[in-house]
Image (cartoon, rainbow, N blue to C red; front, side, top):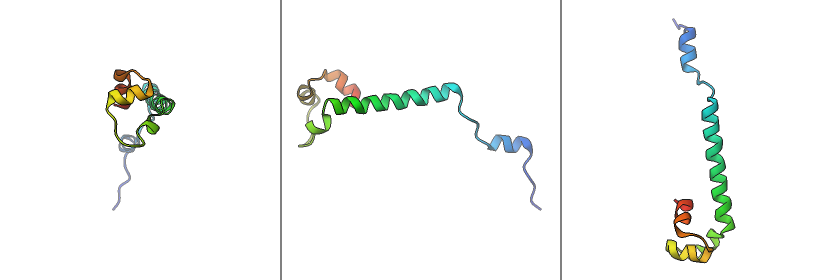
Length: 75
């Protein structure tokens, strides 16, 4: 005989909607990912790497970028 779950069991098994803080964190993460891609495109990182790998310093020089900041962008 199959038993139906109790209301408590059903509530525990149902995922709750994300909280406002969880949604804010997700939106912030999505925005930062978008901005990182935008900046990489603006600096033409893919074009600079099209012929092979470069050192961080060399890539920063070609992109006219600050090497530690570029490391943060690509890291």
